[in-house]
Image: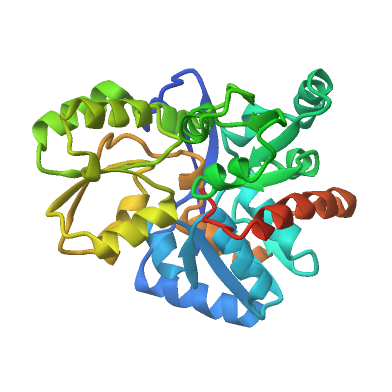
Length: 350
């Protein structure tokens, strides 16, 4: 099997920033049964475990040994008996796996698969922000680079961010980063007025807006709503509930792991889902009797979709691309994750 290069832009994928060119993705290989058999053979030969994030292409999710959110997969990586971890996701996720499994070799099928949210704050920017608030606690979403985690007091996930912030002395100022929509959700839930929020965002989630949600609710009046707190429409969802447009019990602000749990227990006939569209594959597997529909069908992360069948084949054939984290940075970053786990609600990754 050979691979070719395909260049895509965010315009091709319906994303907001039409001027941004997405790095070339590896193509030319179809996810056939023969491909799947070769992937399994190569993984066994390398004593490798394949992890796939919920936002990956369905073929990648289906070939993986484990599918889930970023932190959950990183914790699996630390527990499994394997020489290599093949992390099918974006770069900060593979970094997190390396942080929690420093003794294992961690590979990502395409190291150029970045993240607009993780890139929205650098370590230098965080150092400058901390200098402005020297006594503040830094709370960082796990969707950040290793360098940012190393400057963090305690990490959080979308499912435990409220608990993490609530565990901090109410008189202590907090710097919350990098997602402004998750930060707004935390501020709303905790009622804190001493929390400073970084103006970062995931361009895919931010692009799922309130107008689209309102239109979908009008078209599907009986549907439940699963809303990821990174979405630009999260506030609109709560507004619709407050106005009585949607019954309060039908609006669920959930992490990706929380969506899977809710799907398994749902009695709804239809659910509108506001997050990256790759999530629909796992939701439909979890509850095939429910009609899951995206709030925005164009909300596909082009970076997640860089992990193609060709990229995975290349990774396992050539041993590309290995993820490295400086040991000193990894040790500091690991502490921020451990502090989160110690509060008693480790949560899902995002």
